[in-house]
Structures are given as C-alpha cells and as structure tokens.
Image 1 (cartoon, one colour):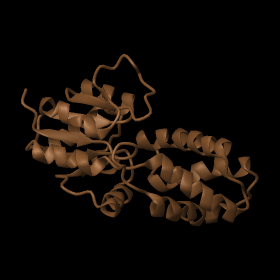
Image 2 (cartoon, rainbow, N blue to C red; image 1 turned 30 degrees about the vertical axis):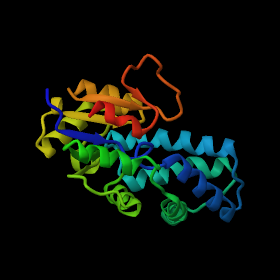
Image 3 (cartoon, rainbow, N blue to C red; image 1 turned 30 degrees about the horizontal axis):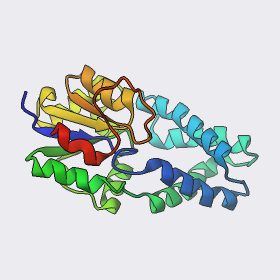
Image 4 (cartoon, rainbow, N blue to C red; image 1 turned 90 degrees about the vertical axis):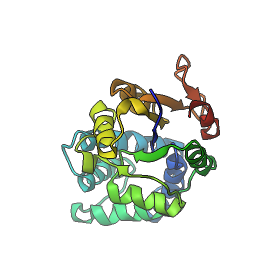
Length: 225
C-alpha cells in the first residue's frame, strides 16, 4: 500500500508534556502553600490518568475531569478548597503549564521530513480541542491538514475507532496512513488494530523492546516514509 499521510500524536511526541507538567507544578504548588518533589509529581500523574480514563470514555467532560483530579489531589497534599473554586485553582496550574509548553527539538524536523516526502500530515490527540490547537500554535508547528480530538470524534485512543474516524475525516484510507506516537498501547497497537502502519517513538528507551518499528527520535522517521 502506498503511504499518503502521517498521523502524529501530540503530547510526548511533538510537544514535551512531561517537562511542562514538571515546570507547572514547581511554580504552582508553592503558590498554594505546598511543596513540589518527584513523589508529588508522580501522585499528580497517577491521579490525572485515573480521571482521564473517564473522560476518554466520554463519561465526563474536560472541565469535570480536572475538578475530579483536584478533589483527589489537593487533600492528599494537605490543601483545603471550596468546590466552587476548583476551576479557578486549576486555571492556576494551567497558566503555568501552557506558558512552559515547548516542542521537542526534533518536531519541526519531522514535519519537514514528511513534507519532503510529499506526504500529508495530521494530528490525533487525546487532549481537549482548544488546548491542543493552542499548543500547536504556540509551538509554531503548522502544515497539518487537521487536528482530531475526542471532542470532535466522539471517541479517544486507545479505541481503534479514533483512528478510523480520523482517517475518514481526513479522506485517506487507514492502510495509507502511518501513526507515530510515544504511547505503545495508544499510538501503535490501537493504530494497527485500525489498519494503519505505526512507529513507536521511544525517547527513553523504555520499550517494549520486542517492538521492531521503534525509533528514539523523530529525526529517525525518514526511514519509514
């Protein structure tokens, strides 16, 4: 099958989500009267993933998953709150997160590789539509035919239907699309289940090591185009 398009994940693939969360927590938590360290960061990530699962299943909206994260997180670190102030409290974190969000230094190069190969380019992300488009704009990454999110597709990764609906919106058959992302279950296995080809971006070398289609940098993507 001839390759016609490359479908990129966003957070952890094009943009450095983890570094942005670390910077945001380090700035935001002291303003609340709490400390930041690796243990607190791990707790934040664990709680976030727990409630993002419900959002990916479309059981709650994006604002509510943020509120639920804070309801679990704040008491654990000894911070009291009024429920009606949760949105404003989260906005404090979000301001720091968005201000620190950066593209990986290989992201623009990857888009240049795709363009040089004469291929089309799109994004499939599990983030909120407005937030994710804002990230791409701040990173000055352009050239995407479309940016697909669960809010528009009605389904999220790792459900293979997310890839099928993204390809249908794009007008390209799944077999003509390469998925590139950092989460093996979400961006590789789910993509293949939908009929796409897939490459795992394993920046930390954490595996799975039996994955044959694996790269350590987006600069290595040329061999798959």
